[in-house]
Length: 487
Image 1 (cartoon, rainbow, N blue to C red):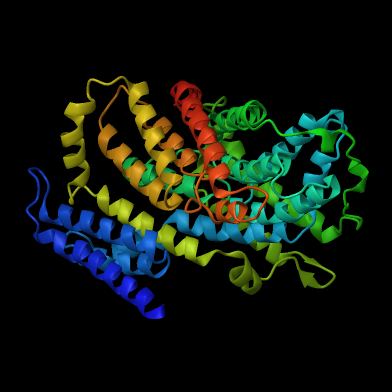
Image 2: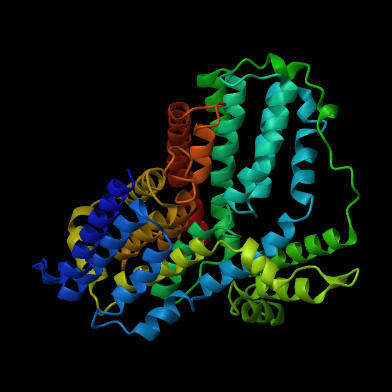
């Protein structure tokens, strides 16, 4: 068994290496250089390793392979990956959200939703408030972390309801947990890797950032409509027996009885401060377009997205309660930072930068090749194609790969097109790259849900793809028109 695993690994590795280092010597299509072929080969090879072997060490290997491309400089590659503001932003954000995750606030907010007077109005009110709590918290927390926070809450609900594995109501609650974790992670770039990768690639190509406020103005309505229509699809097609919820005594839910500590209050205040510093400048500048307030906000916004969480990290380390700092960097780095995700993020930033590098020529070649095909299409049809591509790929493979590949292709194809809102396309791709909830390769929580007994892989796939289709249509016909109005 172990020998067959080793053989499979080495065969995969050889195939990947052949792509990475052999594509340069394959005759290039007209308009594409040998280095362009080499970069494409590196991307295909690393994609194979990402999907079949691992995401961490191949991402490191990727940087070394790119260094062998004549037009690329290794120091510049490192600066554009580990030195990229997106990488630093994510590291600081992981630290700040780790501090918040150690408090009782997430569970308190969840219980506030599902034990509220609105949740007591009826079974579907309860399901709606339960799902809404995930949407609200998930806008600020990693989807994987959020899923594992909600898993014990869901188990407690199922036990109190007396549900058995295989009951449609239990299946719906589990599927809703997974789907809403994915939807919420696409609604803001806060603590969410996949939208940030898309936004980073746009910034690298155009030298202008998509601010958080405008991203959220587009993404939040799409997420809320997807949330609502997904619940409608459960009601229409799954049709669970809701009788167990009709007499459900919400007072039996295990509450957080401990008082909120001073340390928890300060951590929450720091987290809220970070969010305000992210969102408010861009939001205010939509309405205040000149004067000293605009100049100050423009200056602060120019410091970049990594600056607010930097302030948060420093404050958490400086402030002491009962002679102890609220946060220690050593603990946060070892327990709160997802290093495999960060390392892969650095790799995707590097390969995305290489693919869009003018000296490599991939962008101009792809644009020149596909422009004759798509030039006659209306902008909305082009957006629909990119939305389908992003949503389908992220539900069958890696979110990061989806965000990198589809954004790079979209930027290449739409370069120079005045008829299409390019930031709107980038937002939709980054958003839908987060909507991963249909198949086990999409996200770990999908695999866990499918093997939990409450739902199964086939059921998760059916309703996950229904939610995916809903999100594609809403992103295209609601999200994109909103983007065209604000950009």
